[in-house]
Length: 178
Image (cartoon, rainbow, N blue to C red; front, side):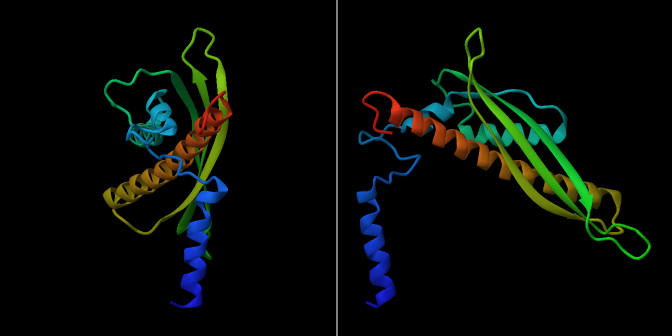
C-alpha cells in the first residue's frame, strides 16, 4: 500500500471522530433522518413563467413531493429570475453567445396563520447559450435545455441549504442529535 492510500484511509477513519454525519442519513431503525422528514413536509409555492415552473418541478422532485403520508408543515416561496448578457460579440456587433445568470431568493415559512418566516437564503447559477444561425425549433429547444439546467442547479442549492437548516435546528433542540 502506498503512502497516498494510507493517508486517504487514515482520513476516512478520522471522519466519524470529528462528529461528521451525512445530512440525509437514515436513523438506526432505518427510518428517514431529520433532514429527509422535514424536507418532505415542504410545499413549494407556485412560480410564474416557464422557467419558474421548471424550478418548481425540480424542487418538488428533490423535496420528495408527492410523498404519501407526510403532512405539509412549511411553505417555500421563491423569487426566481434569469438574466442574460451577450459575451460572444462579433465585429458587426452581433452576439453569438449569451451568459445566463439565474438567481433564486427563497423564504421558508411555517404553515400557520401568521406565515412565520423560519429562514431564507439565495442561490445563483450561471450557464451559457450559443446563438447560431439555427432554425427556430433548435434554438427554442436549446433554450429550454439551458433553463432546465439552471433550474436543477438552483434547486440543488436550495434543497442543500434547507437540509442544513433542518439538521442544525434539530441538533440545537433539547436532546437533539442532528
